[in-house]
Image 1 (spheres, one colour):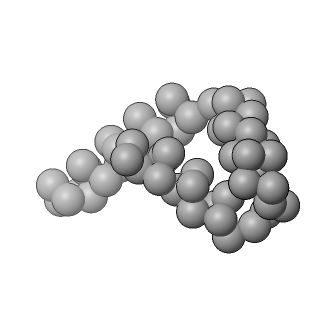
Image 2: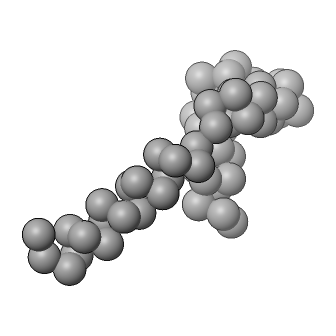
Length: 55
């Protein structure tokens, strides 16, 4: 495994260890309600991507 693969694998391992689906779902549902949008809408998905990226 080269350095890039190692770093990528470490990042994925950390993400999987820290990801909390209940929190993610709760935040997404709140965004959907605040945006008056369907939970599966593009606007909610975009907002959740910003949350996951830490922006």
